[in-house]
Length: 228
Image 1: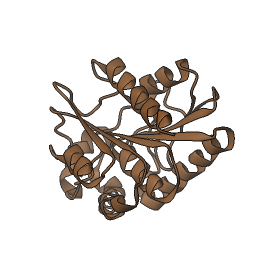
Image 2 (image 1 turned 120 degrees about the horizontal axis):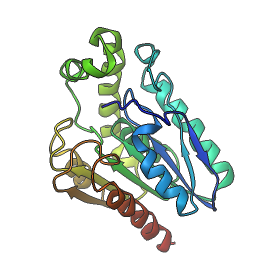
Image 3 (image 1 turned 180 degrees about the vertical axis):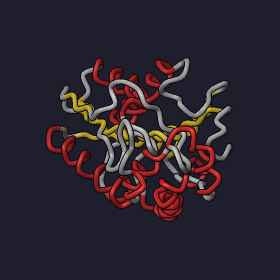
Image 4 (image 1 turned 90 degrees about the vertical axis):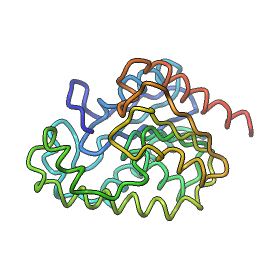
């Protein structure tokens, strides 16, 4: 899941009165979502993409963090956006999608967009073996991976408390998460819309067609805004 590249630090671009908090995935950084961040900022939105605790270019402290730390980091960033924007939207990639849903269950936001959220995650060991090429020895991050599974379970229990409209996006060639993850969300959230993108994998914001994904996210934000 993690992508290590340039521009891995936190991003805060103050634009207009509409704000968007964009959350990266497990072991990753804002680099995973940077094309989307730039797209939103170019359209004069205020955009915040934090580095969640334990994460970043090397994720050196990842194994010592748990989902409560990641949530606290996301909530602090949400507070930054709410301080300057009257209207706030949430976008989360992979693990960030779980955190976005958790925040929406606890805070009033205008809309949520999940990008390849692993809502049905249960196999921490299997995921750890697969991520070894990215994060090194699986044992080092296994406690954090088990915490990620607990976050998925907690988020499933909280779905009934999410009142904001949700756009659940997934690629039909995503082999990192369960094939019916986005459909699971759409079936359990009355205001949700399911968007399955043909020929796309897990890294929706970095793959070909990323501008189309970004345009879909912006369009989704506009619809709830027009429902006021």
